[in-house]
Length: 145
Image (cartoon, rainbow, N blue to C red; front, top):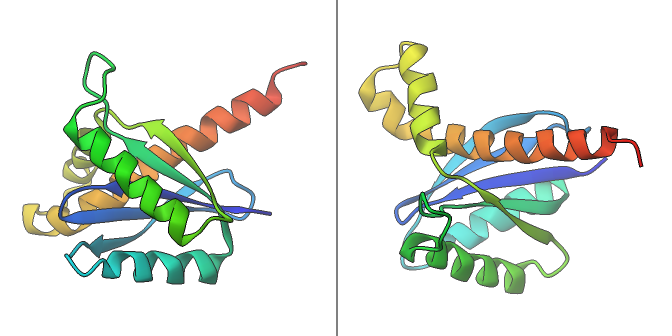
């Protein structure tokens, strides 16, 4: 049973989600505040170690036309730093277009106040990214060969 980590990487915060041990569902886990000292990598390393994560799914914020913009390039650079930090962990990208908007709609519909949404939206977006990835994996494994 392998835990998979989902990340929604922004300039200010990183939303973190974890799969269940069977790899069926994604749950919001944490929000890591980014700083210039790169302490986010220490926080990520603790999560990787604690949950024995073997794969990371990084949300890739493509432009609406499918091209790579500046933020997507930043995420790719972040992935390179992650690879150096944890070379034993597989890293995959997942198209995350509109995941933050979807997570905000979910939180609004749940009645969460705006000030609390700001603290929660990133980890919910990470869970949406990871759940999309898990659903695709499940569908692919169910296809006849």
